[in-house]
Image (cartoon, rainbow, N blue to C red; front, top):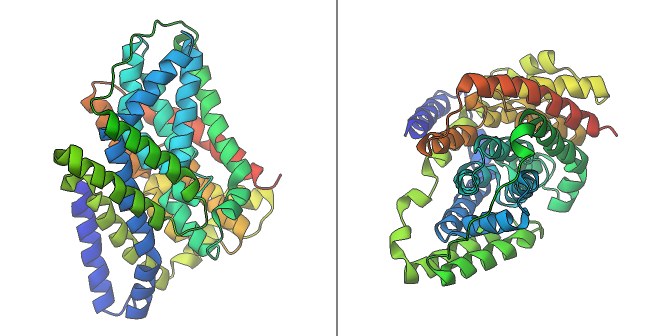
Length: 382
């Protein structure tokens, strides 16, 4: 509810800025035309992933991974790494941080392993692995528009090496930090059957078909909306109680809408000049590191979404836009509020009784975030 209150306050500020002429009406309309497909995609893909989780798809996949792990904790963890990356790349960071986290925590407990390495894997990779495709992160969808609406394959070609580096560095850090817990063995228990096999199969088919559809070149909201409608139809017949208003991420939509208006107004008040003085110009490695580092700092001070919107105005080329994405996506690992997904992830941890203080999270983030941002930024110029 705090998210909705903040979003409502930002919308009110935006309305005042429009009424007073600080934000011209044509500019506000242009922002709305730019973001409505993005917000519709967020709503649709959230409904798909929530219903897939309700059908126990993620639990079943995780339990299969426990069998494939061959009683070796490090191999099971690598399967979780792979699942987290695929989930983030194709179904967005929120799916990984919010829906996959409870699954991997219960999986770890199911086989007698400490849950913290698995929980940190989901939240770090939810953020850092969200560089490859437009659908991976709301910031990427904004960047795709700024890049002239390039295709998902062209976007992936631009971000492939940074995405690889941004996923690899946290994995290495996690293994080094938790190597004692991961270099052990476990005994897998019998997997529990799904409560409704029809819903499980329907969810699996929808998610599998969505993976190529989201990179087909179609506006991403179309396949996501079709998938949401199909799954909702199955649940309407077999488990109507699961179709609740809470499936719709309305608080995030309200917050994002308010942020779009306020940041657009800030551009009219001279924000780009201030950020140019901070982040500089150029496309040489040092200039890109300066830009990505500034964007990462902005994400950790405010949040990655407004930070991207602010720095986009001074990113005047594809490689500079890519550097901003590296900063705001891969760099938002230090403060809890740097990514909304991180806050939601921590709520899930608390509900499941997993203890991780914010002070420890910040200290770990101070190690991994600079390394990840630097590696991913330098990958842009290879």
